[in-house]
Image (cartoon, rainbow, N blue to C red):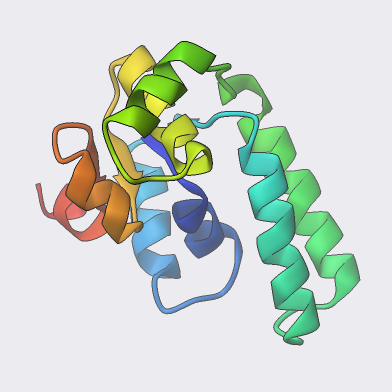
Length: 134
C-alpha cells in the first residue's frame, strides 16, 4: 500500500518517458492511495493532454473512467487539520499537502515526482526512482 500523487497517475495513465516506471510501480504495489482531489487534478492533466493533441477527448474520457474504477476503493478522505498542519510546516500548496496527508494518515510512503514535496517531506515522500531502486 502506497500513496501516489497526480504526477505518478499521469505517468501511469498517459504516454510518457516515465510510463514504464509507473507500470513497474503498479506491479510492485498495486494499491495506490489517493485523496479525492486526485480526480480534479487528473482531469486537468487530461485536459492539457487533449489541448496539446497528445490524446483525443474520447481517449481522455476512457482513461478517466478506467482510472476512476481502479482508484475508487482506494480514495481516502483527509483531515483538514492534518492538511493545514502540513501547510503550516511547509511552503507546499494545500493541494499538494492533501497527498502528503494521505500518506501520513495511512502510514504509507508517498511516491511523488513533485520536487517540493520530496524536499519538504523527506520522511514521507520518496521519488519514483528511489522507490523502485529500493
